[in-house]
Image (cartoon, rainbow, N blue to C red; front, side):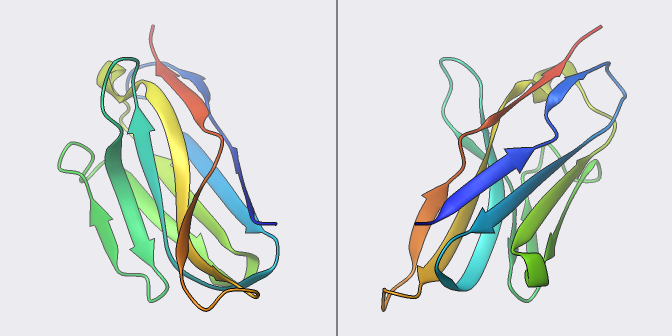
Length: 121
């Protein structure tokens, strides 16, 4: 049983900061890539940032320079530090992981339940 548990979402004023956390647990053999996606009502789910096991990162153009993704491999945890938040950052943020379970010979993708981030005065 693999589970991704997210925390850190909430309400913040424009220009403020939040840090999201996502911890993966279960019978995990190896985690390759972890990342964050977001989705607003009626919109497509979009990539925010990803990070590989070797700490190579990728960011959406809309968040470059404002968001920073990092990971703690020892604890199977990924973080998203969000600074200079804008109202257009408002969305449900989903944690994603490409990982291999102990019982599997292949990698598969898993999703967290999502955490709401609202940027508003």
